[in-house]
Length: 199
Image (cartoon, rainbow, N blue to C red):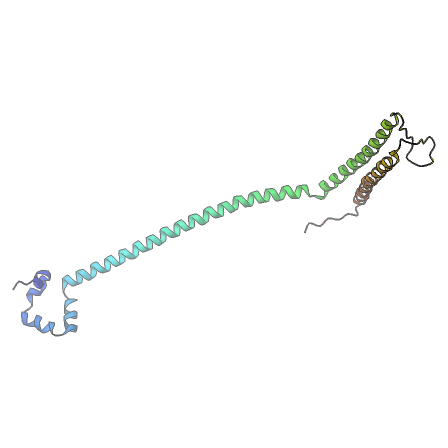
């Protein structure tokens, strides 16, 4: 007997039609019988094989994704490593510029520079006074009242002269005050009275 079922499952040809009809009357028996057929077993094995291959492909995809993530993490870590090297260089440079010996050197240089600045302020004032003395009708030998050689300046000059003197005194005093503060710190430092902490 040749039916589409037998053509699809040739192993059914060895069973009598009455047995097959009896099997069809019970779904449980039909399922059990079908899974015992060689063709169905081959199909089941093929499905299982495909399932394993799918699992392997999925595992491969996961492995590729993991590899990519690892490569990205490594590249990021390398970038941080290079950045840390730059930070360490900057930190070393900063520490170099803030070491006690370097700061002491800067203080001594600034002390000399401040002394020169105050001398320049005084010299500029004296030179300005001397230049003013050479002008006719505006001779002033001393800024202090009652000083020997003082002559009366031109009208309105008293206010300007007093303002100039006051400005000079304030500027000179501020410059010398800064100088003396730095001198005190430099002296204390030289005596070992200035302590630095690294924390």
